[in-house]
Image 1 (tube, rainbow, N blue to C red):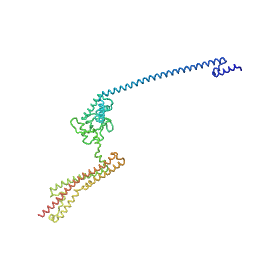
Image 2: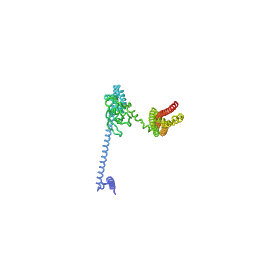
Image 3: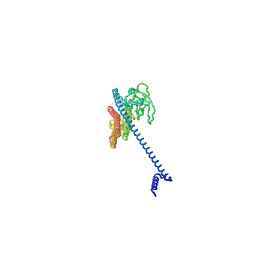
Image 4: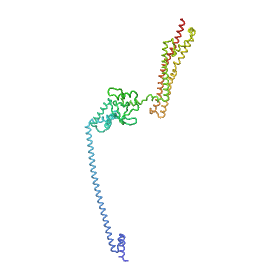
Length: 455
């Protein structure tokens, strides 16, 4: 194989590696040469296109970078301008605030005083029953107390008006419509009569004010008679003066007063010991009253018998004693001792009826304080148990035991003292009747013996 042929084979091999598809279509060496030339030209054009595109993109990036730097420079300039303007505004505001403070003068002190007084008035208006009739003043006082700006002339004038109205309405008795919360939680309009900001009543019931709802509610416990009658008379009155309860503490004293336990509650606090003491007292008082009435009737019949000693009657002790003078009058002097004994027997027969129940009353008088002492001991035991269980930090936990102890003592003394006086009265009344029996029987015996001797 010649050298020329070898070179051609090499060119064919290179062209086959560069463009295998084109070489596959060539049929002779000339075509292969043309195809190779065309492939190199196409590749050169493609490379030139890529270079051109890259240069264009590079130029675009350079342009965008220049634009970004320009925009940044603009923003930096704008920021510097705004910062300078902000500093100028701060200086201007400082100058204006200084000028405002200088022109305001004492208005700052006035503003502080207004806020303080408005805060005090707000708390008063919040809890005053006048707010049920004038509900918008509470929000105004709260807004004025919490504002951070100088109050306007209108606000100051209204604030003065509200304070003046509070003072004026304090001396008025007014009937108006207000919300009344019933026991089941329902709210309805009712006619309410208020005495200043102190006391409010409706339908004969005393009311308490609910600041959160700006409404009234009936007190859980009402005042005892005759205060409900006073409330009804006040509601029906149209002129003149009426007697009425006024709470200067604006409801605090009334709420504390109605919480005081009544007699039934006191008795319940005494528990079983208190019930026993009261039972002893009731029985003792009943028998003492019965015996006192009995002795009163006996004394009246004895006084009638004193006016007619010659005709003894069996309806009274004196008549029955006088009826024992029986036998021969001629032998009375010889049998004087027997007659005296018979009279003494008759008197002694009447004494038990006249002095009955007195021993029981003496027992009740002695037992009352002793039962009270038992209740006191039981109450102190309960108190010490409360202290042991929960400590002594809360006095309310010990109140039940102390209350039971004190109530038992009071009940014991309250039963013993009246029964002591009743027993003394019964003893005096019975001794009076027995004294009359002794005097009249002994005097009658002495009179008859003296008459017999004179005869």
